[in-house]
Image (cartoon, rainbow, N blue to C red; front, side, top):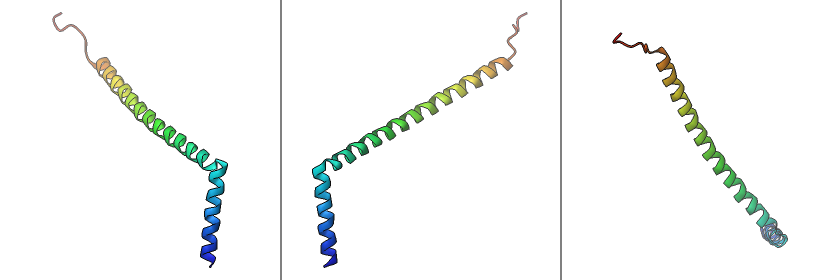
Amino acid sequence: MSVLLIGFAVVGLVVWLASTGYVEDVLAAWRQTSREVRLYAQLHARSEEVDDAHRQARRAMNNAAQHDWRNPFE
């Protein structure tokens, strides 16, 4: 009997929330949050690519600075 009462209460709550538009608001917020999480993940991946490119450029500049650039034919 108590399970049936709890079931009716849950169904009534869901129907009431759906009629107030709360469910749509929650779903819209969930979609917005998941979109922001995806965009943040893409931004993070791109920033790591940029960091890798900067590290490679610094390494190349350090190697070039250590190289003896004198003309060997002098």
